[in-house]
Structures are given as structure tokens and as C-alpha cells.
Image (cartoon, rainbow, N blue to C red; front, side, top):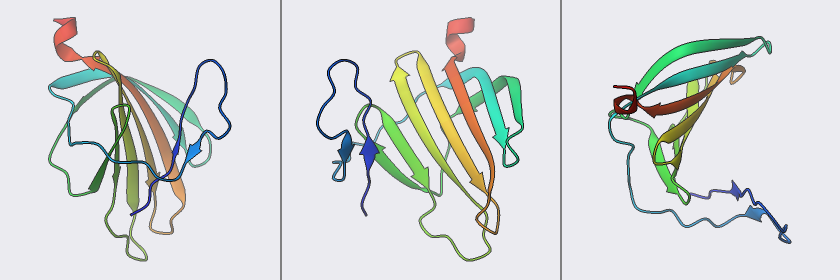
Amino acid sequence: MRTASIREFRGASIASPWSSNIQQVNKWSPNGDWVGAQQKVNGNLKYSLIPAVQWSWGTLEESLHYLPDNIILKCPDNISIGQSFEIEVVWQSSPTTIQIINSNYNKNAELTGIYHSMLRPKSSLE
């Protein structure tokens, strides 16, 4: 398994922002229930806002890869021809913020939608 990462830097740039050898980190999972808003871009580039979404970490059948900076990459272990699939990145950018990007593909491997969610703990609203 090989992973690649594009790192974001604030300040002086470095010679190469690419890394082709990222050491995976220990397993972790975002705890509790999270709420927020979600933006969707369809395969035809139509944009829509979903103002209220809920999310919690659940049991998964995908392959999970734990990367530095509190990032989890979720993707299928195997994809058969004619099978739809999803790739998801979960990034806990702070103790009170999770961002999720989902890319969905149909059975022809055509992009059908991209979702971006910005979430905060549900307990912070109570």
C-alpha cells in the first residue's frame, strides 16, 4: 500500500510539498455525535447546501488509513468492475471541528457527487 500526501504550509515554502512515503499513525476515531452543514457538488457541477447534517463514527467495512495531522482516509479494499464506490477523508482540524470530504462514483467509475461537511460536537450546542 502506498499513500501520497500534499501538505499545506503557512509561511515559507519548502522545496517539495509532496511526500510519497507517509508513515501511518496509530488508530483513532472521532468520539461522540457531530452536527453541522454540508455542501454538495453533483457530477454535473450543480451546487447545493444541506444546512443540517448529523454524523458519528460507525462500524465500517472500508479500508482505513490513519495519516498525520488527524486525517483518516476511508476507501474500499477492492473495487469490482461495475461496482459503485465512495472515498472519504475525515480530518479533525481542531478538538471542536471535523471536516469530511466524500467522493461518490457510480458503477462506471464516473464521479456522481462530492460532499464537504463542516461539523462540531453536538454536545457544544446543548
